[in-house]
Amino acid sequence: MKARVALLIVVAALAAVVWAIVKFPSAKPPPKPPLPKPASAAPLEVVQDYLSALERKDYDAAYGLLSKESQKVHSRDEFAALAEKYAAPSLDAAAAVEQSAEPGRAVVMVPMVEDPATSSFTLVKEEGEWRILFRNQGGSPWFPYP
Image (cartoon, rainbow, N blue to C red; front, side, top):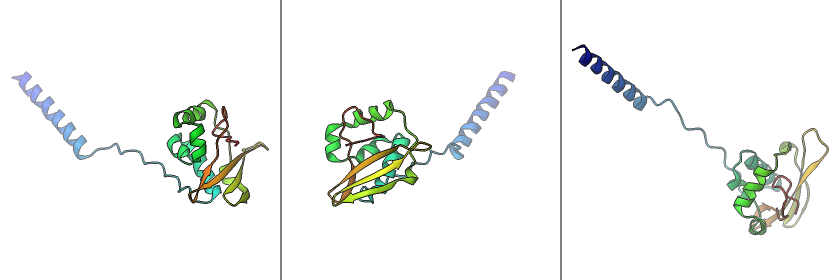
């Protein structure tokens, strides 16, 4: 008799726990990271979005901001492997400056934090959208010298 009562208490307790989990879920899914602005944004914004995507390890978003020519040189998997291989430098994207612009071409300089060096990003306009050039073999997505 005591065993049946104990079993009934355990079953009732389990049912209450299951009901509470279903009724009041405590784990909310993590918020999604912001999507990058369209590549039709200004070159400076495209570079900032590209660096932000690399920092979040959102290689699909970063790869999507590369020029078509760059995507022919580097597959998405190769791009992601290079981004993982090379340590992320301390780039100050907020201090980036569009240094020059020609019709259909722009250069954005991004200074390093606590270092006089910079990373240069060359962009081209493809179908009305700014895209980053990264054509060099063996380079780093963080320093995509064309």
